[in-house]
Amino acid sequence: MSHRIFLAGATGAIGQRLIPLLRAAGHHVAGTTRFEAKLSALRALGAEPVVVDVFAADALKQAVLAAKPDIVIHQLTDLPPGLDPAKMADAIGRNARIREEGTHNLIDASIAAGAKRLIAQSIAWMYAPGPQPHRENDPLDRAADGPRGITLAGVVSLETQTLQSPPLEGIVLRYGQLYGPGTGSDEPRGQAPLHVDAAAHAALLAIDRGTPGFYNIAEPNDLIATDKARRDLGFDASFRLPNG
Image (tube, rainbow, N blue to C red):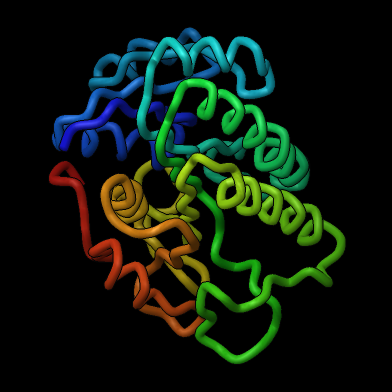
């Protein structure tokens, strides 16, 4: 079944790998960027480009209304190229703001446009200390402070809004640590690595599969359990785009 997709964060690492998958599946894609200079790249990937800032609530609502999506995919982040360690400290606050305020604006616009399902990017390393591997119903690390606490507050806000904004059906993809094209690392990293192509494919699968809730998305690892995503979404961590 083909859908009209509004992809927020279309020029990010996952967004650029996701657009070809969506188009190959027959979906129409409106993809956002904040920068006019990236319009041609989005067109080349097969998306209808939309220049909009997620913090400009009125402009965002008009953009989503014009796109008339039945599915909205939230892949917005604000991270430095290659995850430059020297710039990550500042990025933590910006990312938290996107997850809180940006998600709020995107949900308001999605509901106004009559969208049915919202698929949102979260992260899989915010669980509280405890027995591993962590499953989706394990508690998050609400005692965290400092930079981790800032990140946690943003994650909690994004996930809560995604799952508690009827009539939208909310699906939260808790991604592991990304590697591959556009991520700053060609090799697996972290305790729960995830290739960017497999991350994009999980978002494609979530369009028509799965029920509202959380899904851990990563390669087999000791930190998080991914059997729910494999069973309900058909997630396959070995998935790669043909162009590598």
